Amino acid sequence: MTRLTLNDEPIHYKLDPATPLLWALRDASNLTGTKYGCDSKDCGACTVIVDGRAVASCAVGIGELEGARVTTIEGLSAGGSHPVQQAWLAEQVTMCGACEPGFIMAIAALLDSNPSPDDAAIAALPNICRCGAYVRIRRAIARAAQSSPGPQRFDPAGKAERTDTKRLSLGSSGGAQESPDK
Ligand code: FES
Ligand code: FES
Image (cartoon, rainbow, N blue to C red; front, side):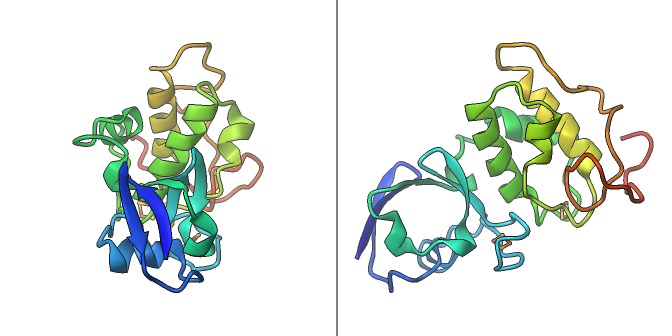
């Protein structure tokens, strides 16, 4: 049995301790907002927050989480009111939405620890958006960060966006999949 706190509620999982957290959430708790993407810790679609840190839930067995505090997209805020969720809507980030919960959780954890992230901190996010919505994602990060104190060190207008279509990295090139008016 694994005991943890899930979205502020105690829960006991009577599952094999090796069960990935992703499947405990989705299959046992019916919290399907956490997405399955790669099952290899490469895409970030399954990201949740564990004790304040962004964690790929596909890559951690529940037995490793005894006593941990886990937050999923369902528990991030009441009614989608978290600044990152609000920024996501305001910047119209969603395309297919598959990456969305994982990205939002990763960004929420980032801004909790670093309210004014620089380009390097943003580029270090491991999440992938297969739809290539990176320009809008960066704008959403900037918008969400504006509600936190301290100077903003990245371009809130998104003009400094790179054209990488795989990650929010700085050095790669590739065809951006953003329309010019977004
Ligand atoms: S499904 Fe976990 S990182 Fe891709
Ligand atoms: S919106 Fe489709 S993968 Fe990101």
